[in-house]
Image 1 (spheres, each protein chain N blue to C red):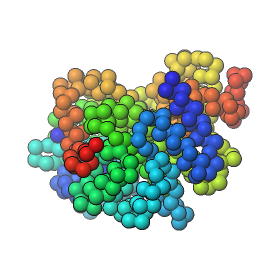
Image 2 (cartoon, rainbow over the protein chains, first blue to last red):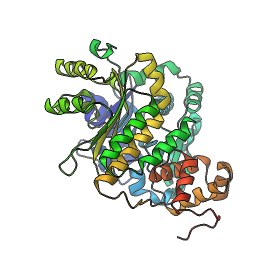
Image 3 (cartoon, rainbow over the protein chains, first blue to last red):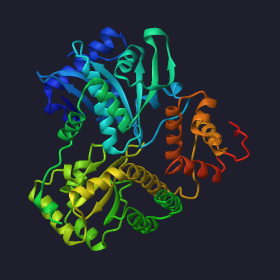
Image 4 (cartoon, helix red, strand yellow):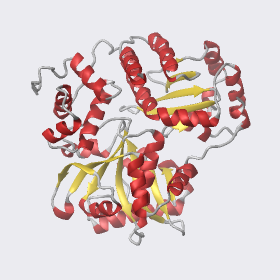
Length: 211
Length: 245
């Protein structure tokens, strides 16, 4: 299942959090050999993880991380504007209707559907909150995954070659985009809605409802 | 027509020169959305809090006197969060919070709410809320229909409040990048988005992001509005010549 978890709520899901940051180390340090910082516990965290981002996380049956993406609003500090301005045509992307997704990561043993679930959940999140687009930092090796899901981002700009190519791109947020991912991956729309509602549950309080 | 009304409303927002004028403006905004109340508050900035709201001064005084800020689920729930939130998702379980809500209802506030936490580029925090007296189903329909507009308006109201607090209302300081100006200039010539994207050799989604960033910086509601404001302020020229940069 998908969970939407703010950084300051990660302590409620210790195994999920621990395995997410370790899988990030495995992906970004071990497999991609990026210049990322891995702490003594084997977890990869950067400066943006300290700004209380929202994570979209796939939790598998054992309560461990299956895949994740990190979300931040572009009206605040974001990686794209601070490190990749050369890939946006020099435009500082800043709008309450655009949120940034970074550190897209899959666990080494993640089943095929996890990436699709993460994307569909991300679009659902945007739809519920009135967003228009997701801005992403994308590396070449993940492009085939997006292609398979049927949800390729529009690339604004890229640097580097081959497998090291890194890009900034955009995904539209809309009902069509979500439904296309759901249809192609076989995830029921009701499941996507349920993930969202479970993380942002409505509570019933008599006094509040007394109209 | 609703869009045209909101555009006009946002243009008037940019002419407000004091928090008192902002307060008057919130009443127009409330009427536009057709809700019971709207309100905006900052956290403490330069040792004071800024607020503009449509509810009664009685309720404002009562709220401050009882220091409800320290127990209000609307305030507590928005801290360290950046997503818009329905008040139904907040934690109203404490007797103090429920007591406050009862008193709020008695002071004419509605039972439903939608909050937008606002985090400024300098880390400053503010909160915008739409509040209404209605049933759950109607409120959900309203928030689904208006989530985008509320998000835009909340941030533009914050920008204006910051300009007022920093006494910068006389000089609109919109800095657009060359790419953003190019985009708006081409659109001002009546070209379609597809044509402009083609000409600039970018995708339509990229064009949308450029327009949206420019829209936010200009304080506009949508692309037409952004082009109009950029022309009015001389940021782009209608002659079609690209501005020098």
